[in-house]
Image (cartoon, rainbow, N blue to C red; front, top):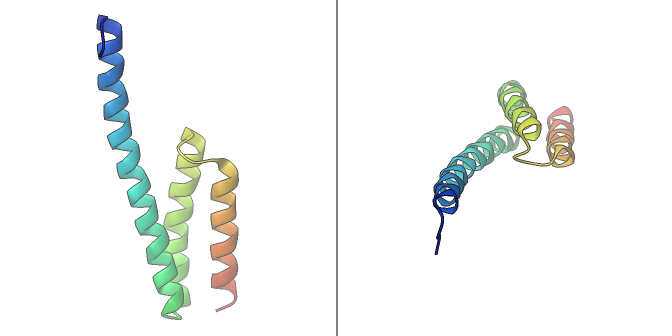
Length: 86
């Protein structure tokens, strides 16, 4: 267990950050699923609107280091290719 005041503080900080990151990644997964569901419904307009929202969040999280920049680029290119093929 934590002995020093500093280590106790770090435990609190890491727990707070873990919860915040988990919430953010959950939101990202919901946005990705909304785009994929619009694609499966063959609705190109709604898919493109949802894609723009998802793209904004992906860029924000990759800038912050929450996800790797290559992972965000991979998601964007694969999903946009599906939208283009509708």
